[in-house]
Length: 370
Image (cartoon, rainbow, N blue to C red; front, side):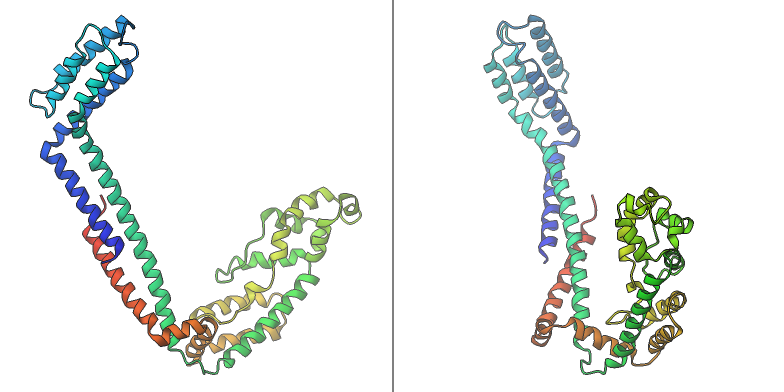
């Protein structure tokens, strides 16, 4: 059995034992004892200084009356009623000392034990809930690890000698071409046009391109400075205000709108328009390429778009997934992973994890939320 499953079973048993201890005495009776014990303990704490020795006589009388009223009002058949009566007898004196208060607390010990049954039950329930959460967390961790290992086994079955160059060459040819096209676009066209590309990308969710900040977008749309290329705009942002006055009408406005957004402009590169290596699964790449064609055609020559169409066409070939799996395997399987697969260590770990997952699932079903 999983350690977490065993801990949950133990926590459940502890709850049953704690609940049984309360039921054996009687839930209502235990609650009454706990309330009375708490109230009397509060009285002892509150009056110990003022009602002892030759202290405040009024406080002494109030204390005596409060204790007598509390004890006399308890049900005759209440468990530990004799403990309360013993405490009352100890405190029913003309003059009280600290020793009397200590003796009263000692006399209340049996009632304190009964009152603790509720705390023990509540603590057992709290520990049970934590044990169940821990089991659920462990189950998620185990399931994630199982997925990793199953993927590792899948990659281990890949044909590592497959001609992955049939994918790599067109993918890398497109990626290199689109990076160069974007570099030229970013360095030569206006910042206004570059940011409008990012605005257009919002209509294509499969292209991971952040939308431009609203204040920056408004500035490049409205200001003559927006007609400058992005690198020039970034240079302006580093100028002193006195130097910037020679290039723009409102240096303060540029500083406020552009200098605070330098990170966005610097990180705006061609990567969202690339395919990457190893490439995605066939359907993912086909749909993403469809969106990319619409965006890439806005800034890249037709020759670059043609290379992207060639990549998209690969996804419809029968051996695309076989070649892609081989590419992923080459990329992700190092010597250690290959040795573990060959020695059967991965299969053994999978068996252990699946058994642990099943035990956790069974425990979580058997022991519900409380």
